[in-house]
Every structure is written in C-alpha cells, then in structure tokens.
Length: 250
Image (cartoon, rainbow, N blue to C red):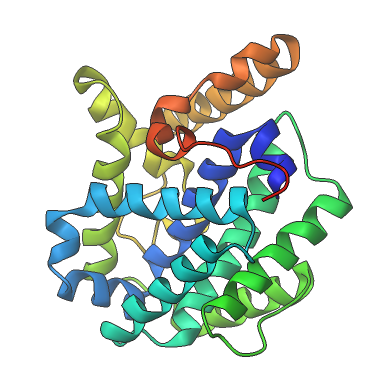
C-alpha cells in the first residue's frame, strides 16, 4: 500500500472515495447518516478527516501508535452511533472492490497480483484494528461478502438520495466555484452504474458518461506520457496529501 501511495496517491484516494460510495445504496447505512444531523453541518470537514486518517494509516503503517489510535477512534465512533460492525466491514469491502476496479480501468499504474494481495491484507488488518472479528483475507472473500450484503441490503430509498446529494456536494465543493455544477454531475457519473437506481438518479446521459470516461482516460494517458501529470487532481485531496511523509524506518 505504501508503494501505491508514493506512486499514485490521487488514484488511491479517488478509488477509496468512489468505492465507499457503494454504501449510498444501502438504506440501513444512509439512514444512520441522515439521523446524525452533525454530518450535514460538517460533512466536508468529516470527509477531509476521513481521508487524512487513511493517509496516516498508509504512511505510518498499522502498527504505529498513531494508526492504532485512529482505528480505535473509528470503532468508538461507530459504537457511539450504534453502527453494526457488518456495516463497517461492508464499507471496507467496498474500498477493496473500488480500488481493484479503479486501478484496472482508470489508473496508469494497474494493480499487480501482489499489489491486490497487499491491498486485501491491509484492509483485513484495518478491520482487525477496528475490532471486527474474522474479516476476509483475499479479494474473493471480500467480494463475496460485498455481494451478499448488497443482495440483502441494497434498495431504493429517500435517505439514499439525500446522502448522494450531500456526497456530490462535498466532492463538488473542492472545485472552483464556477465548476461545481459540472463537478456534481461528474461525481454522479463516476458512480458505478448499478447504483443509480438505488440512489434515486437515472443513469447519466450518454454525453456525460462519455465525457467522464474520456476525462479519466485522458488523465491516464497523460500520466503515462508526462509523469508530472500525476499531480493532476491533487487539489481534491490537498489536506491528506500535504501530511508529512514518515521515514522508511517508521
């Protein structure tokens, strides 16, 4: 995971954010967010904190005291709001799936088999650190768990739509003001197609889907030709990417 972070941190964070968005189609999860009004007041700050936490876990390693404390805090927050452990486990399964999907389609640096094994092991250890018993260890295990949860829990609901609007707004607010309307459309178009019905949106119009795909592929091509283009998109996660990097000894 650390090598992925050093080579393509923007891809890694986008993959995580788009992966977790699958939870927007589960009413049992979105209902908790809607009931917790504080998220609507400080959504952008909380999203930034979540990305900073991910950056800390990856850069410092899970055995570092900072990382252990972060995982304990995640567990305590979920217990405070009565979030079942399987909901957190599902979010982690979505992250694993999202990383495999994003890197295989949109990243100039696709995951090798070794990379995917490292990803699965990393999130398995995160789940253990968050006091979740017996999480999956490999990609097939994570994916089976995700598919089972979605078969049982994915359904259209008003709370799904509310949270999708909130998440799209949070994403768009990272862009310059004049670009935010298009950025909201971009976020929805980037979501997996099977989610649109469950979150209350129709499938994005063909031109928007084409433009979104073209932007991702253009960035992928540019990074291959001009390595400095890897910086494209860093403004989306500037707080997480500006954390000081630990030494290799850490």
